[in-house]
Length: 513
Image 1: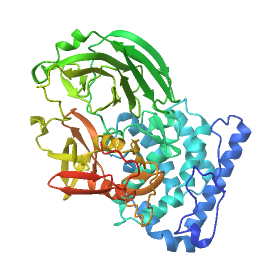
Image 2: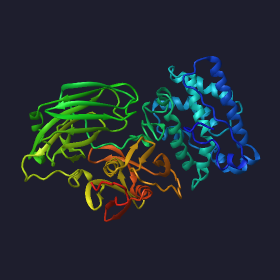
Image 3: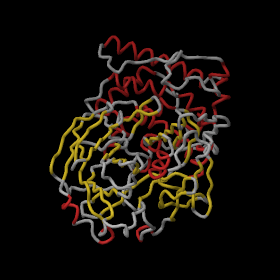
């Protein structure tokens, strides 16, 4: 039995048909003994030699020759495979010069001396970053080898199969290999080294295709308005929570597991209500500030949202949550208010004002309230649940289909009982309790993965564009694919006149929001 965390090494185009199985090797990352390391290198080299022999045999050639011909083509763009772009930074240029030949030989199964190839990769990686450990390099290479034929199967299914589509597919796969690598190895390929556990594995969340952010970016901006330190707390890979009292209200900050790759300090700051009064002008002049606070991180921002729950007996039902930008402007944050409690999410250094209308004549602000002038070039799309408006979002129409920012869609799915997380390489959905997903007729396609209850159900194209609300880059996805994914858990939806209406009648104990 192979480790469940690795995809099966056997592939339909080769291994399954020739009934050949190669035992996967598990290399301990902590290996430091030179004898153990050499043994691991020898085992890995033997596996590479065996894989190459199968791929280059008459049987393997007839089954996978078309794929290997493309991969071995002189016009194959290996910078696109390794970095997702040809516009390399100086550091990436050094990595390409040092490693591209070796990695190309590995991925195309053309090495004539596998042990020499492995030693070459180790030496070149160490020369680029002297903190890299040889055992970590072996583990990284083992991950590639364990997926070699499985990726070849995915390539064989590409339509059309050419150098461009193959490079895109392999770049997505290579990002996955980097996901379980050490931060030092990740840094060679332009990643920050942050990781987040998803779907039973570990996935990279650094810079994604075309230099885009790998997380759907919430419409929030860094503030700095409230500077009185209320509390500091240490956060790391483990799940944790931080509780703070603010003006008689209880604030609970819930940090999911793997929100941070390294140990960081979370700082909560506060300010007087009068500090916020000055920014509640113009559009928000009718609002009265109730609570003010800030959340700041000593290192990288969390890779998944931190949930904030505020409990207060006097919390009005029409309360609003705003982030405060450095220039004092406000942006409404999506929030759920129920029974004296308000819940919302943060994923960046943020100052927050919780306010309520000071008279019944003031209407609550919808997020966003209406298409704003800065939305020029975008189309306004509305999301409804069971016919009830949830939000309006800036959409993109391309290739005859509509793309929406994933972050807004995630918030709506959270509200109807889904758990969902985006890690830069895939969108992981967990269906509401009691659901019985239909996994029949799966056609994976190409692009970023959509996973349902841990199973890959689609790969879809994405676009990266500026969210005109936050003025930061975020990830857009064709909403048609999301509709198909939801249909697998009996959630039907319709699209008419730029309105996406989600029906939750098929979900057990679904909230109508």
